[in-house]
Image (cartoon, rainbow, N blue to C red):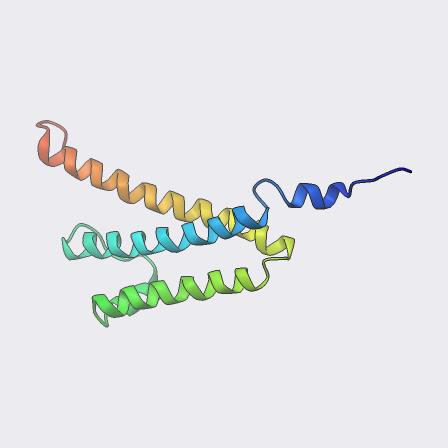
Length: 127
């Protein structure tokens, strides 16, 4: 008696496109989105940045609460849509660039904070 293994299923159940990785990625995007919203709002309130996204700039005109609520709601809807199609390979693959984008955005906030901190603490570090 010969037993065969469905290698396609084995590959889909492990690695970056696996369901546990996908769900963890969705949670990470939600957390990074909230971090981005709070950090962006902080930079704007300090007068160190402006909102580059015209949709979110419009939401910001409604005040900080409208900005945070809009940003979180929009990304949560997108994450919900990806989760709805979680069994589809395109949904799992779509999360990869989204996750990379939010990781880059979060990294830029941290880098900006470090840069601003160094500018204020170390002499000769600024312009």
